[in-house]
Image 1 (cartoon, helix red, strand yellow):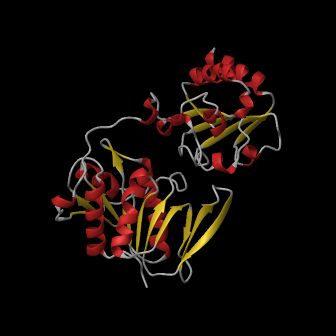
Image 2 (cartoon, helix red, strand yellow):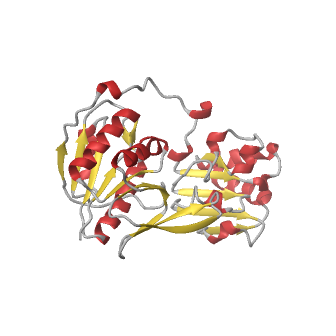
Image 3 (cartoon, helix red, strand yellow):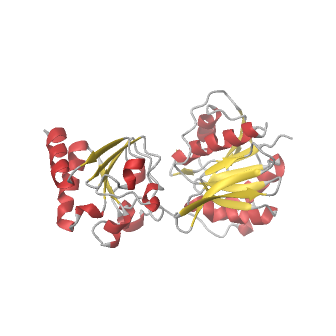
Length: 320
C-alpha cells in the first residue's frame, strides 16, 4: 500500500530556509520506501517564487496557500490542517525548528495523529515506520516504532543533505478559508536573539572554540584566525556558560545547528551534545592535544597538537 508524504517548507524574511530542502530529501526517502508520492507545501510569503524553487527538487507536486508574508501560528495551524484534510497524506513532515514546534503539535492534535519530534533518521521499508531520535539530552539514541498508518514528524536540521533533484512538478494554489476570528497574533518585525551581529547558521566557514582555550583573554587567538580565514566565530557550551561569548554563538543541541562548508573545532573535545549541532558540516577540521578526543571520530582532518602553537601558525599562513 502506497503512502504519500507532505513536506511543509519553511521560509523567513523572504527566503526559503535550508532545512526546507533537507526536508525534501527526508520526504523523498520516505515516499520511495512506501511507493508513494512526495508533495511539498508552502504557506504565506512569496508562494509562487518559493514553489518555483521546490518544483525543481524532485517533488511530485507543490501546493501553495497565499496568506500573509511571514509565519503566523494561527494561520499555519488552519492552513496545514486544511492541506492534510484535502491531500490525505500518510506522513506530514516539518522542520524541528522554532516555527515547526510552534504549530505542528497543534496540527497533530487537531487531526488526532501521532507526533514524533526531533527525528534524526527514519525507515519505512518494513511493516511500520520507525524513527530515530535522541534521549536524555543527547546522551543516547534510540528508535521509536510508530504503530499507525499516519503520523506527523518534525525533522532535525542538518541530518539529511539538501535536495538536489530535478523535474518540473505541478503547482496547485489551494484556497484555504482562514477563520480570521481565530487569528489572534501578527508579525510586526524581527529582532535577533541576544542582539547579536552575526548568524552562525549562515556562515560558510566557522572557527569554533571550546574549553581548551583555557582563558577568556586567549579568545583573541580565535578571532585572529577567523579574520585571516574570513570566518565567523562560534563556540561550545562551556564558553557560553562562562560568559565569554554571547549565547547566539553556541553550537550544539542546546545551541544552534550549523552546516558550514568548513568547521574548525579548536580545543573542543566533541561531546555528543556539541556534535549534534555541527556534524552536518561539509568538512570538519579538529585541533586538540588529546588524540583520543571524540571530535576526531567525525573530523575529516585532525591536528593533534597544542592549539596555542597551531592556531597562530595557521593565522600566519592564511593571513600573510
